[in-house]
Image (cartoon, rainbow, N blue to C red; front, side, top):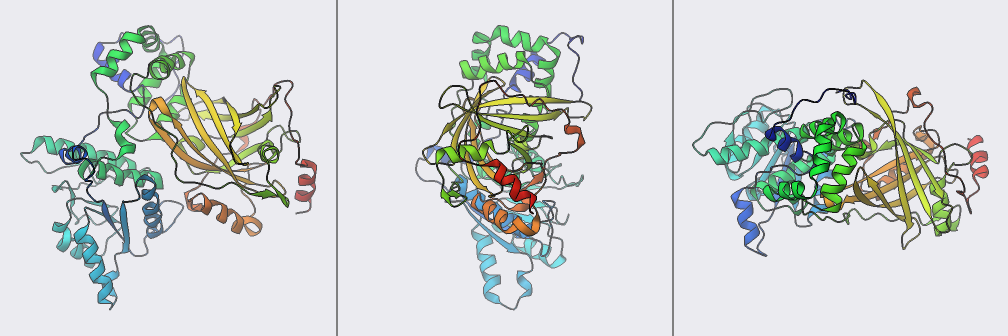
Length: 520
């Protein structure tokens, strides 16, 4: 999808089209099916239905997540579910349990399935396993079968769903029934689950399960912002931001951003942020600033997620970490190189996916100020054009050395983040930084981690793998969750200039780091 020229002709907008584009202005607020059961549970007060999930995984099956075993992926997803609610239970079993002569194991699996309200079947193809699932399917009201035998039947809210395979999308056709409202809601849920699953990452797999929980068991607080506010939102927008709305819809680039956002599925932060970064403009910033930041027309207010809680590095080169040294670690190679760090890999595809990422950390001209500037490339969604983007964060020290508060106005919306230095090698050959963030008035929260090095190359496997894996574990991240950033030759001539009067290191000797690296 190439960017349109500013001189491109703008077609007249009918109100229906304008309203559809307006509803896409905030990526995560869309129409969302809320089942009667979940709504009723919310009105009952403290009595919350238990969430019990069973995952049945094909023995020896391999996932698209860097070829990690599906069994490991689902176990990791079960841990991440606890970040949302400690009461959520998810048991993971291999589908070959019946092959063992241990009746206790088979009995346990059967009992867990019978008491569950969600059964997720992943990569199960053996005839024996299919027969077992078919014999026990009536115990579970919600069954989703992914990348599994076509003989398996799916259910949502007790309603049988006919499967029709189109690629990996198994939720494309529903059996017609007289319950049209329920049918429509199930179709909405099924489509959202299918699209999220096809993105193949742990966060979206968890999102699939949360969608089912939210629709059929009990409301999920973290998903409440996916529901449109309706007429009150449009009334607020038109009352307070009429000029900004008209300017955006009349401009080809700003309008292109809204059109791009309207194609993103619920919860797809990758699609949402790519649209915003690809088609950002002063008019889009003014639109978001008025609708969201100044008038909060969506009535949203979210906090930075508390989990996972990640402890910072405690010391560096034999010395206990202090605030000054922690800042020096972020400043990194700046001064010897034109940048502090380059991003090698990331865990959150929405924010870490962009090619050619450079980080510049420096102390400001005014005493006590510290800044981070992120420079990266954005490619239009069809890959036809690239351009550089630059973000400037205000950075404040946290209560503990190694933890920092970041804030930025990003395309009209204030974003707050907590960054933690998890580990930095003594020779500054690599570092791992974890972050948690929230765009409060957009109702958006996120977390992730970036692996950095001076040259954008992955740390040497033999020397650093064990230490890196340990650092990732402290972030509750598996190495197979990481994806590599494209740092190829197109990263030439990045805009890396620094402001006058800035200062760099206080305690850390970067020349010592260069000598250490030269000896390796």
